[in-house]
Amino acid sequence: MFQTSGDKDKSKDKDKKTKKKKAEESEESESEKEEKSKKKKGKGKKKKERPPSPEIEFDNLEDFVMDPAPQGVTVKCRVTRDQRGVDKSLYPIYYLHLDNDKKTFLLAGRKRKKSTTSNYLISIDATDLSRGGENFVGKLSNLMGTKFTVFDNALNPERALPDMSNARQELAGIIYETNVLGMKGPRRMTVIIPGMNKDSERVPLRPRNECDGLLIRYQNRRMDNLIELHNKTPVWNEETASHVLNFNGRVTQASVKNFQIVHNKDDYIVMQFGRIADDIFTLDYNYPMCAVQAFAIALSSFDGKIACE
Image (cartoon, rainbow, N blue to C red):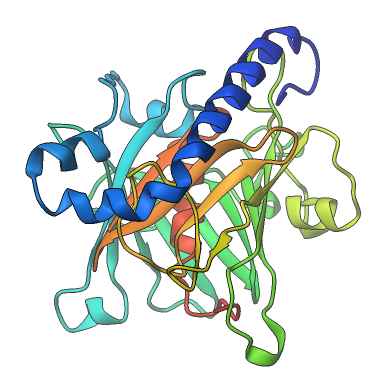
């Protein structure tokens, strides 16, 4: 499904299993509210509702957060927002951990204080969030209102070698649909990520300028080697008088920030994100997304420039 060439037969069996699983999940959507209320009555049920991440081990943290999730494995994580302190109320620090018993640290992110545009630095060190630090692995940049681009840690193309071998890669483009007239309603978002090759590796995208980047390619429908994803449209629930999604117990509080990113062809959930406490969120992602892509997409939902609430 996500390969740009070859090895597509293997994904067909996976697609069938995914569709079967979705059919089973849809049957549970009506009882989701009841299950949430039941969770408060016993801790045992709460653990069943929000199972931790499968046992995931890695030798190199930077490689793990940049590589796509293993196929067939949902990487379950937790995002925490630290707003304590004077400046953190304006510039919170966000942390990404595996949602397992060890709470393994993966990434930290923070909005740059002296930047003319909304820029979030992403690091593999919770104490080092500097642009020049050796732990810097990526950046979320907001140059056009409700549109964001995710970069890795390589060089700006203006400073790169002529062959662009050391130029930065674009990892994702994020587009929020502007909510005109200030009408309330679910957010609508589109995510564009590079495609995968026959070896299930990300196809490098190193634009020489903005006109060749993910956002412009999508705008001009130049979709070669690109994957287009969208947020799943919530269903209106008459009983609760709200829009709802089935997160299978991974999300427990209503929020405009709750969303699921799906592949249109089969509703395959590539990523989901939602609130479980005031400053705690779950973030789960699947192949072909990596941790940096998923974390950056989550960070974009916190940005104050989004005019779609």
